[in-house]
Image (cartoon, rainbow, N blue to C red; front, side, top):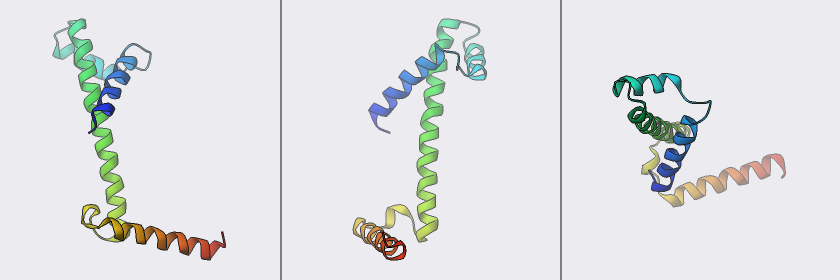
Length: 101
């Protein structure tokens, strides 16, 4: 995960916390973990929210790779880049021929 994306997640979590879109269940969990101490709970909330955002990104990346594997029948990291380029060129050529673009 890139450091820039991670920084943006912290900023997003901070903004969410200070707005009306705060995840109340996550806030309750943070308060519970910190035994009602709201100052500590705020930082725990941000930490937990960043973890959630990171999981979403990883899950989405995995789903995209799974779709690619389904289409081609091979794993994403097993395909050399030149094969991907030729595959895309072939599809573009087919679409141009088929739809006379």
